Length: 102
Image (tube, rainbow, N blue to C red; front, side):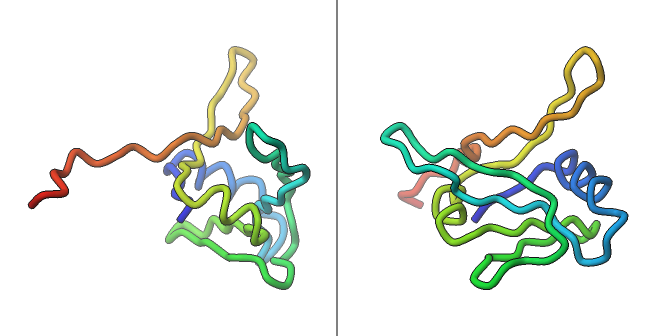
């Protein structure tokens, strides 16, 4: 399941604060050999079939089915550039250093 950092949750909450029940929606725009091209938008509500993720802080993420499959083992973070602009980043979830033999 897609995980998100606290910073990403705060950014989503700020982006969607003007609309009740709104969330950040991921959809696969184009499937390619190297991966999927994702479209990101603020949506007033999930669409039929979307997976809905939420945090205690109120951040909501809507994943269309193909995007949910693609992002299943990913981590959503937010980064800030020198001008203060925020951008979302999707990266591999860190692997816990747990011995599977135990």
